Length: 542
Ligand code: ADP
Image (cartoon, rainbow, N blue to C red; front, side):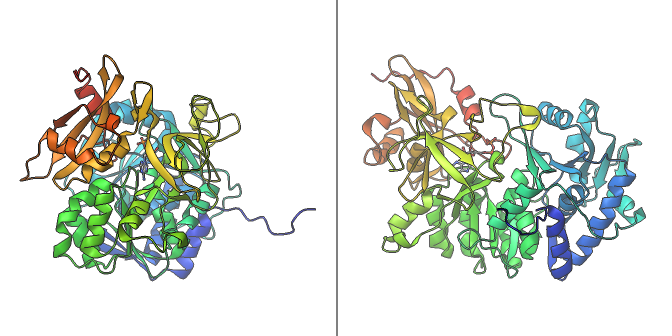
C-alpha cells in the first residue's frame, strides 16, 4: 500500500520564495574593503530575480555551470540562488587554488560564465586563456580599483542587473535530484574531483542546521559565515540562514581576525562558523571585545584542539561546536553536542567530549570498517577503522564517475579516508586520515591525536605531526612545532609534556621548530607540504 501524501520536490526555489515572502525585512550586511553595505532580504530577492534573467541574456545553457570566484558577500548569495533556481549549476571556485588546478576545474566542470569580485580579477585574469568553455566574465564591484580588461567577454555585474527585467512568478525545479551546485575537493591526492549537490541534498542538509541538537538556527539569529562560500557551500550556512530567516553578515575580502571579531561585536552576531585556524588567530583578541550575543561557534574542517575550545570557554564562556565532514558529505555529518548522559561529567570531561567529532546528525549513517579486512568494527571506543558514510546528502559518485571503486563501496557507501573510533553512543573520535597515519613497526600512530596533545602545551601555538622514514620501524613520528611569540621551548620539554599523555612508542623521535605550519587553500594544516620539506629527514633513534 502506498502512502497518500503529496510528492513535492525538495528544491531551492522553496527556500528562495520562503525567504522572500516571510523574511523580506531581514538584513544582509556585507563588509567591504573600506565600508559596509546593508540590504534587506526583499531587495536581495529582487536582485536574484534580475540575475535570473541575466543568465538567460548571457545565453547560459539550461543546466550550464555558473562559476563564482568571490569572497563571502551578499552578492555571492544572489548567485547562490539565481543559478540553481533557474536550473543552472552554481560552481564555487576556490580563490586560493593553484592556477593549474583552477584551470583544470573550470574546464572539467565546463563553466560557461565566471562571476568574479573585482579585487580578485588580478588573480583570475592571467588564467583566462586556459579556460576552454567560459564565454563571459562578469565583474562584481567590491570597492577594489583593479582596471577592467578591454575584452568583449567582460561585463559589469551592476550594469547587467540594471538592464535586466526581473523574473516574474515562481521558480520551479521539477526534479529534486537535478544538480544545484558543485564543488571540487581540494585534491590532496590526484586531480580534484567534482562533488555535485542536488536540490534535494541542499534542502535536506540546510534543514539540519535548524535542528535543536545542531546549530538550531532560528529567525532570531544573526549569522556570520567565516568559512568561505567556496568551501563546501560555506558548510550549508547560507541556505540554512535563508530557510530560517536569520539576519546575515558577510565579511567580504577582509578575513583578518581583527576584522572578523569587530564584525561579530558590532552586529551582535549569534552564530558563526569557520576552521580552527581563524579562531586561533582571534583568541588573543577576545578580552577586548563584547561577544556576549554569540551562542554558537561552529568549528570543523580539521580537528578542533581541546585547548582552543577551552580557551574560548574561559574567555567568553562559549566553547566551540565541533563538527566533522567533508566536501563529499555536504559537509555536515557529525556534531559534538553534550547529551544527557554527559550531565554528571566534570568540566574537564566535558571538554574531552567536545574535542570528539560527535554523533552523526539525523539522516546520516556511519559505519567503521577495517580497511585491510573489510570487516565492520565494534563501537566500543577502542577499535579503530575507516569511517564510511551514507545518507541523502552524501555523494554517491564524483562528477563524470571518477574515483569509482576507490572512494565508493559496492553497496553504495562513501569511504571517507578518515580513521576513527566510535563509542557506544555513536560518538566519533577521529584519530587520523588514512594518508596521514604513521605506520611504525606495523602499528598505527594517530598524528591528529599527537598534535592535539602537543597543542595542549601552553607555549605551543600550532603543531603538526608527520611520518618520516626510519630504517628499523619503517616510519616514525616527527613533530613540527610552532612556539607562541615571546616563548622558548626545547624538544625535551615537548617530549616531557607528552610522556604522561600518550603511549611510549607514540613519542615523536624528533621535534622540529618551525615558524608556521603551512596551510592548504582552505586553511588546514598542509601535511603534504611538510612531508615534502622533511622528506629526507633521518631519525637515528634505535
Ligand atoms: P580536503 O579533503 O581537500 O581537505 P575537505 O574540506 O572536504 O577537503 O576536507 C575533509 C576532511 O577534513 C575530512 O575527511 C577530515 O579528514 C578533515 N576534517 C573535517 N572536519 C574535521 C574535524 N572536525 N576533525 C578532524 N578532521 C576533520
